Length: 341
Image 1: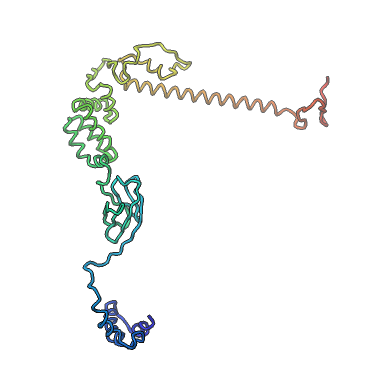
Image 2: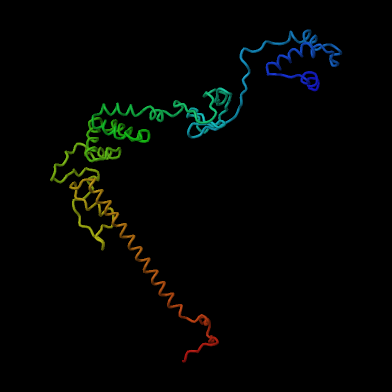
C-alpha cells in the first residue's frame, strides 16, 4: 500500500471513477508490472505472472457472485416470520418451528431442515403475505368475498339477497363473517326455511345473523304474521320450549317485582306472548329491579353514615384531660371533680 500510495495516488488528479480505473490499469502494466521486485529476486511482476500464473487462472462465472445474509427465525401463530423490519408468511404447518432464512437484495428464501419451503421477493419494510400459506378454513374465508355472498344469496331468494345487501352495505370487510354465517345456515335448514327466516327478520326490523338463526331454532319462520288487532299466538315449542307453564301465581317483593328468573319465566303464558315481546318485558323488569337495589343500597349507606356521625358527636363530649378508667385504683385527674357516691 505505501508503494501504491506514493507511486500511483501521489500527484495524480482524477476527474471521475472511470478515469481513475483507466489510469490504474495503465500504471499496473507500464510501471508497477515492469519494476524489479526484490521478493521475486529482481524479476518483473508482469513477466512472472505471464510465465507461471496466467495459465492457472479460471474464467469468470456466468452470473455474478450474490452476497447473502443468513439468519434464523421462529414462525409465529400468524404464520409470519420477522426478517429485519419485514414480516414474511410461511406455510401454516410450520407454526412454532425454527427456520433458516437466506436474504439477498432481491429475494428471501425460507428453509426448514435444509429444504426450501418458501420464497418471497425482498421487501425493505412492511408485510408480505401469501394467502396459500393459511389453513384451508382461512383460505375459504378469504375466497368467500362479498361478491360471492351476493351471488349465493340470489340463489336462495329475494329476502336472503336483501339481508346480505344490508349486511354488506357498510363496512363490508368487518361484516363479511356475519354474511357468511347467514349463508352457512343453508347446510342445516335448506333454502326454503332460510328464505322464510330472512323474510321474517326483515319484517321485524332486525335482519341480523343472530335474529335469523334464532327464528330457525325456534321454528317460527313459517308462522303466519298476526293481523292488526289480533294478539300474536305462538306454539309452545317456541324459543323457550314446552317447559314454560301456562300461568302460575308467584310471590312478589315489596316493589311488586319478581325475585328470580324462573319466576319471570313462569309469568309468560304458554304460547301467548311472543319471545321478542317477552324479552323486552324481561329486560325492563331487570332494569327496574337493579335501580331499586341500587337505591336501597344508597339509603342504607346514608343511614349508616348518619348513625356514625351521631356516635362521634356523643363521644366528643368526654373531657380529653381524663382518660377512661383502667383499673380499680383509678384516681381523678387534676382539675376534675370526683363523682359523689
